Picture 1 (spheres, helix red, strand yellow):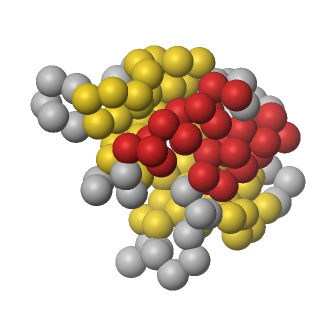
Picture 2 (picture 1 turned 90 degrees about the horizontal axis):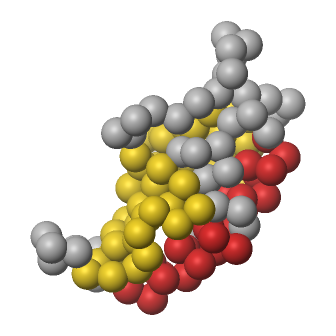
Picture 3 (picture 1 turned 30 degrees about the vertical axis):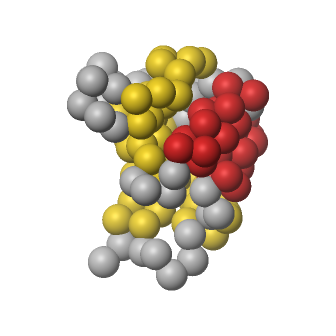
Length: 122
């Protein structure tokens, strides 16, 4: 089963550069690109991520309370993904660290305002 998370974007080139940095830290690569979308995946895993110019022609915008979570292999990868997000134009929503629930995670927003986080699985 393929699972895919997709965010809308107002600037496909900017989003591509931003997510190349993050997905690269996770060992993923671009698997498809069109004039309106870019897709990334980790070969053989069956989980993907995409950004797209909205099909309906309306402006892309983020949802309040909506967030995508990335499972990182360890705390060091959480730190690197968060750093890549900020270095690529993202904004900090909560730096790497252990949270009250015991999870080690970090939060950021992409240049379009979409919220993401990475959580250490190991």
